[in-house]
Length: 600
Ligand SMILES: *[C@@H]1O[C@H](CO)[C@@H](O)[C@H](O)[C@H]1NC(C)=O
Ligand SMILES: *[C@@H]1O[C@H](CO)[C@@H](O)[C@H](O)[C@H]1NC(C)=O
Ligand SMILES: *[C@@H]1O[C@H](CO)[C@@H](O)[C@H](O)[C@H]1NC(C)=O
Ligand SMILES: *[C@@H]1O[C@H](CO)[C@@H](O)[C@H](O)[C@H]1NC(C)=O
Ligand SMILES: *[C@@H]1O[C@H](CO)[C@@H](O)[C@H](O)[C@H]1NC(C)=O
Ligand SMILES: *[C@@H]1O[C@H](CO)[C@@H](O)[C@H](O)[C@H]1NC(C)=O
Ligand SMILES: *[C@@H]1O[C@H](CO)[C@@H](O)[C@H](O)[C@H]1NC(C)=O
Ligand SMILES: *[C@@H]1O[C@H](CO)[C@@H](O)[C@H](O)[C@H]1NC(C)=O
Ligand SMILES: *[C@@H]1O[C@H](CO)[C@@H](O)[C@H](O)[C@H]1NC(C)=O
Ligand SMILES: *[C@@H]1O[C@H](CO)[C@@H](O)[C@H](O)[C@H]1NC(C)=O
Image (cartoon, rainbow, N blue to C red; front, side, top):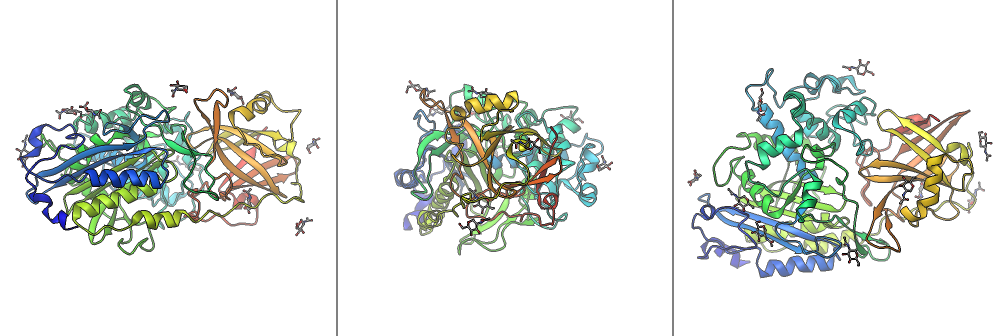
């Protein structure tokens, strides 16, 4: 791509999509050719088509020249923003998922920088010395864990992703932490844990007499950076008409075509949460933002926290460098020949790509996959926001590398071909329940009831199939409408229990008998759709494959328990083994990631 060598010489300043809302002074009279040009448009539109994306993509690209002048500030939208067919523009807002975590780190750095706090907060402050209700089962972690340990995912505690509920506030989650099992020793390995960012989001209210975390970020980061479209409030994002739906492939059959499906809006992950004071989801993944605002954020990151036009210091000097500094090893070997290992700092990783240092982070919540990356040595920033649930992780990666290759003047690599080959390998098929399955050691009726785990809360398990004449009133109600609220969720001939739960990740646990005391667990989401003949669809992205989630019945006389394992510690990705193995042991309790006691 010889063209790229001329990049900074082309004598005009481009206004592509928008100027990211910045006053003209930011142009500094400098010239560069656009990167989000017709060639890029064609490329991105082809990626959306090839991957049969149900959604679209918002892109921001910023670039400085050697004199520190901004030569590219470009933002643009492609594809579909909503189920109703609205187009993505540079103002369309996406949930940026875990790219929210850098805002949590930046907020913490503002507290660290706050000289009026007494005692002062440090990156190495012990969390137990700051948050008095912090408690965990492991005494070493309890005593030693610092802010940086939480930020870099090395507390020894695994995900416990389904522990928090929409109805929890942050202190409720901190209380739940007291009861979680640890899976590795303190500082042993990198184990991603969203809950530790939820814990960090409790620092502003703790240190600033109840100041809500999300409002603190708004007042100290979004507002000073003029990130006017950025918010933690689903309601606000919804009311201004710019919100993208988190799009999914309804009815996807990974064995027939791993890319096809009917475009449908998935239930918005943070839809049931509060306004600008935020919620239990804010610290780990609550930010909703647009390409225009991501351009402002990328500029600020490349300027070490300085506002790109006013020169006001918004993030304390050095804080972003601290966040990028390697603490944990995320990968044990490079994924591709052009890439290095991935080193994790604080919501930022370092990776090299074709010899260029990238500081970045991915983001995922249901319906959205994002990448926010900067190349400090090249003065380049790229953000790719997708509303593609199943393949946005791949498409955001492909588009990111395409833009980097172009901006750096490198020969293109066929990332789409590479990743599509990977994603074309079907996941392991589930083994169906054997026709001669042995019944469990307690009858199905006796399994129905309320279960409790102190680290997760309670839920009521209803026996749906075979029908249960002695069902509780809520279970009768569920049995009567389940075919409407969860179409096709109950498979004929398989004894099935269902528990409703207000988790951001599932609305119902489905527990199907497999053999003896072993059950298969699926996470289902009852999702409303604009269709009077079928008002709901069942979101279940592991409909035919073995998702590895099991429940083991533990019947000791009249005492009944369920030991669940497979996805409570780790991630639920097809073809990717959980980062954290299931616990081993001789008893159901020992083998359980989460053990539920039936309490009535
Ligand atoms: C703030 O952002 C908005 C929207 O992007 C833009 O219209 C406005 O000019 C910006 N204001 C300043 C002071 O930069
Ligand atoms: C629902 O569908 C109807 C008929 O197709 C359409 O007129 C309406 O705009 C849709 N509503 C939404 C919120 O998409
Ligand atoms: C995006 O928002 C800006 C500022 O409100 C506006 O000037 C611009 O026209 C919008 N772009 C689109 C495509 O609507
Ligand atoms: C710094 O702390 C003081 C209280 O000691 C508080 O009033 C102020 O809002 C804090 N500022 C920031 C940016 O944290
Ligand atoms: C932490 O929990 C343990 C076990 O429940 C308890 O003994 C201990 O007092 C708790 N510590 C704090 C600081 O709350
Ligand atoms: C911000 O800093 C740049 C580079 O040092 C300078 O050119 C510009 O005039 C400054 N802008 C303001 C508003 O101070
Ligand atoms: C049920 O669990 C078993 C044991 O983990 C597994 O082999 C099987 O594939 C699962 N079946 C379904 C339908 O999920
Ligand atoms: C169930 O059937 C399978 C083959 O279909 C057989 O291998 C197994 O021994 C049978 N199990 C029992 C308990 O009869
Ligand atoms: C199931 O087991 C319970 C407890 O052992 C017993 O009371 C009940 O009668 C059994 N129900 C059926 C339908 O067998
Ligand atoms: C279905 O039943 C549940 C009780 O299990 C109830 O909470 C829910 O509102 C019902 N939904 C509809 C659409 O009838």
